[in-house]
Length: 91
Image 1 (tube, helix red, strand yellow):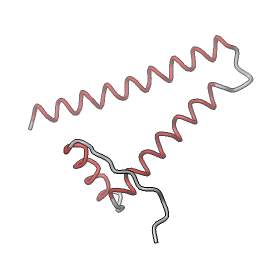
Image 2 (tube, rainbow, N blue to C red):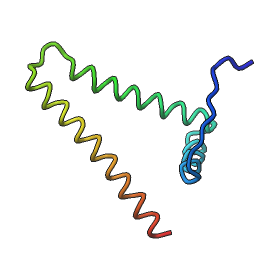
Image 3 (cartoon, one colour):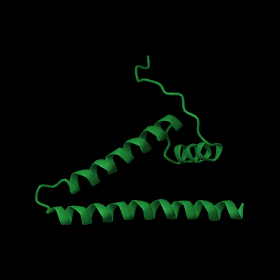
Image 4 (tube, one colour):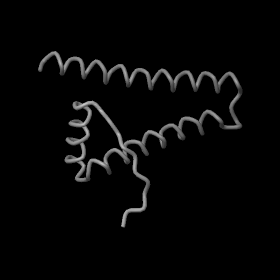
């Protein structure tokens, strides 16, 4: 019997299709794919946070590190958006 809490979720059809494809490639259910990706995003967030909060860093270095991490995350998201736009143009 399943004991994990459930949450009803609405998502765009194209995102659902991407999740379905990824779940098939990773040989797991769509639910397991969603949970794995969510967990991964929190794990990455904790990695960034812990490196910024290191007691050995000065405030200036901490700010620079955080700015660099944010810039990297923004760049990744922009690249993904550009790729998705290119794919939709070709379709």
